[in-house]
Length: 118
Image 1 (cartoon, helix red, strand yellow):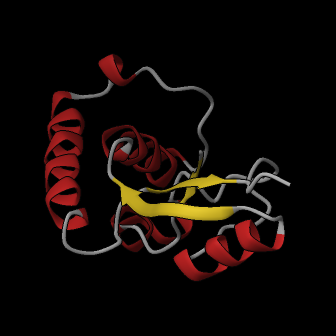
Image 2 (tube, rainbow, N blue to C red; image 1 turned 180 degrees about the horizontal axis):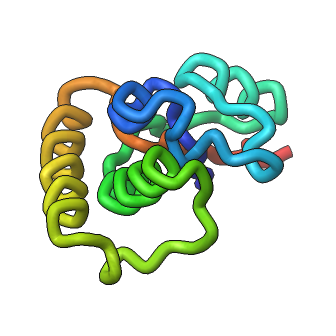
């Protein structure tokens, strides 16, 4: 199983260059569904299920909001955010969760794959 940021997410669309997952040096390359499947197959894995997940949307929203506001993300304590920002993050998570059930706009790709036995 692998999870990786989704550049087609609602968070990326909302925050653009301030999106949390443009996170060098940790994320040097981000993948779409087809390129992630191609990478798995080229490594000898057989993808069983690939889907987008909104599981981290609340955190991604809060962190991206701080980056947009402050220009940096020195650390994050979601509980210390203004109530308005926490409520906006919760609303964002609900919208992304519901939308990700119909289209691939969740914050991350999740791929479940296996390597065939030799």
